[in-house]
Structure formats: structure tokens, C-alpha cells
Image (cartoon, rainbow, N blue to C red; front, side, top):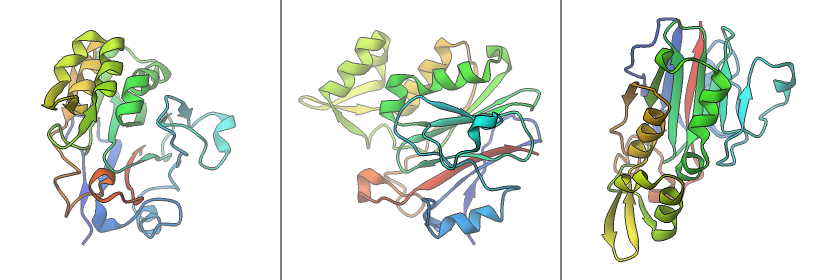
Length: 227
């Protein structure tokens, strides 16, 4: 039986979400996993063409009808409209409000985090910070994601305290904690209800696809919708 990861967060019951694992198959267009996933959700998910940017798709807008528009996050307030992102080391970030009438999902790798995809998603949802719930999904772990000094310098130039998310691994190289960066960005926006984290797609080879471990093009999916 295929394993799904269901977020453990205090979202209202009408908020449904899961993250696939490698056991369900490749979730890219044409991958064997999409047909299997489709039977688990109320409609075809709003798939995106992801570019590690900060564009947010409003899935409820009339102009959102194009197949797989270029974006790295999506939001909806409409029931029965699944929003999805593809991941294989980058972090899926799920958003909902306490009343259960708005949701979102973001593809947050290190480039998206640096550029501000979390902030862009929160701005598009336009909710008071006290109403926002967030769950951080499976991503490459802090002791598996080594980056060069240029990556650390980019984050620190934008946000000096972000240096706390980096641990020196060897001269000119650093371990990057994506979860710490995400939590810092959320905290800066006044978001206090943050769940999830603690996964490592790189180390959990039997469970997750990992681009850095396998150089694979295969992807998992994070899907969220309102009933």
C-alpha cells in the first residue's frame, strides 16, 4: 500500500492535505503517480510549472484556467479545488486559516526561500497573522544540505540573523537548515502556529525522492484542498 504523509497540524476538518512518498510514484506530468493521486482528491489538482520563484497562483481567478501556469505557490478559497506543488528536497509549505476557508501551498527550496516565496504566499492570502496556520513538509535536512559560501552570503545579505541557519561543514562550505530559514521568515511575519519539520528527504531513501542524493527528475507532490 502506498504511504501518504498527512500533516499533523491544528487545521479545521474541512482542510485536507497530504504529501506523497516514492511509493506512490513519480508525480511529474506523464509520471505514473498522477493517475493514482487523482483518485484520492476531488478534482484534478492545479499543477504548476515551477521555476524556484515567488509567483503565486490564485486558483479561484478566471485567468487561472491555463494548464500548469508558471508559479511556485497557489492559494484558493473554493471548496473542491486541490492545489499542488512538486518536491524532491525542496520544502512544501502548507497554509490554512483557523476558520478553514482559505488555504495555500508553496514550493520553498533555497532559491524560493531567499527570494521570498513564503512572504509572497502570505501576502496573496491576505490574512491576519494570528489566523494563519503553517505546516512544513518533507525537505532535505540540515546535516545533508551542504552549500557554498555564496548561498550563505546571499541569505545573510538579505537578513543578517539568517546566519544562525548555517553551520560550517568545511572551508568555504556550510550546512543549510531550510526549516530554520522558513521558521525565521514566518516568525518575522508574526506567524506563531507552525507545525511540521524534522524530515530529511536525503537520508530517508526508502521513503522520499531526493534530487541531491539520486540526481533524479522524479518528484513527490504536496496537495491541499477544502472540502
